[in-house]
Length: 241
Ligand code: CTP
Image (cartoon, rainbow, N blue to C red; front, side, top):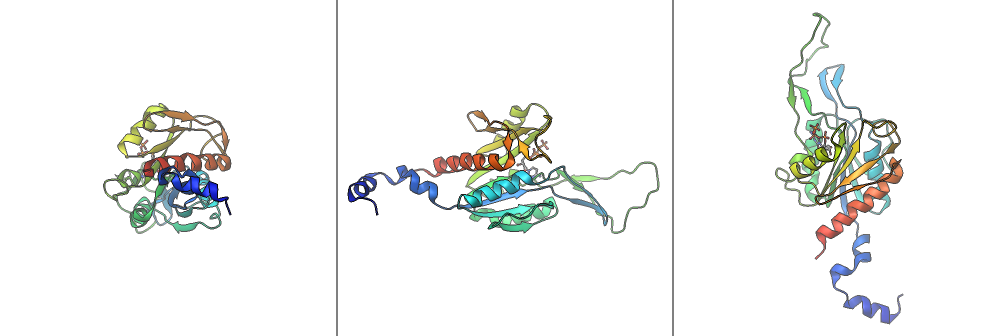
């Protein structure tokens, strides 16, 4: 029980300045993670290099901080973090449908999935047999899930994307921030050895609308906790009175 003098002082504060109270309020968080798989025939698919580790660590860190987390994930070899709701999907279209269905009740949505940008125009019913020396596949664009969160899905919460780039990291990341209506892009340079993809470590730059903030190289586990803090700070400032 707090001394009455302290209670009185707290009560005089405007509600929007009661930061401790606001920070501990649990929020609903959606995280996408892993690759998607786009089937070519019954035994083959197109996919991306993604272990899903960063997204799973992020989901676990939000859950650890007391928030309610839905993890929408493509196929990975990872265990679902304890206490996290899990919705497995296979294709970009399935991930798009799952996100569309759940995003409106979310306060924060963070898109760590490596979504395939193209999918075969048609899926062969039977295994494609070898014949000619070359094989041409017709591919069509998949839905941009993050890019449709604002206009199509009417999401008004805090929106966070990832950008894995091999060149012009900050320019590409900032372009995605603006194009997709994000509050933050977590950008990493995948041309650097020892980070990203299958690694347990990552080195990212936080790209905000008005500035960039590089973070030091860290394990994906430790980084996820820093990212949760950064994302919650944005969320608090967006929802402050
Ligand atoms: N993303 C998504 N749906 C897609 C493609 C990407 O939700 N069909 C999300 C990713 O989860 C990530 C962000 O958009 O948070 C950026 O993904 P990236 O593949 O880097 O960007 P693209 O928009 O696909 O652009 P490009 O491949 O040309 O770099």
